[in-house]
Length: 166
Image 1: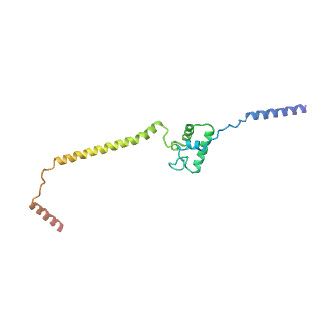
Image 2 (image 1 turned 90 degrees about the vertical axis):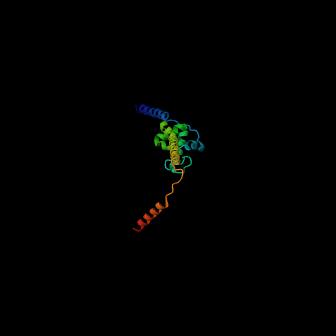
């Protein structure tokens, strides 16, 4: 009886070990990823620490971690777009420097042109108003300059001198 119990326990251990080996996933064969492939994705992304420095040229530890993360994603077979989408989902639009929302993207492209057009309209209308004012002033100007009579000039000078004396 003890022998059969021991044999059953040994068999259960062997079967259990076999099942446990089948349940462990086999390592995923990864393809080698070059630095150029990582930089191709990283060049369109920006450093989370520094402002306006591309991820592929930044030397901070955060950027090195992000480049390593990009390498791991590429080894897993993710595309550039999937990697960018993942980073935007986790860190926001500032990672890629361009709004991902189509409306905001269009707004960021169109707004400078609209502001330039408004500025040109204001400058053009100001110039036209000035030209009209100048033309009106010239049209209403007297033909001959008016000369103040000497007696009137003396009167003004006398008044000025009197005011200055107190």
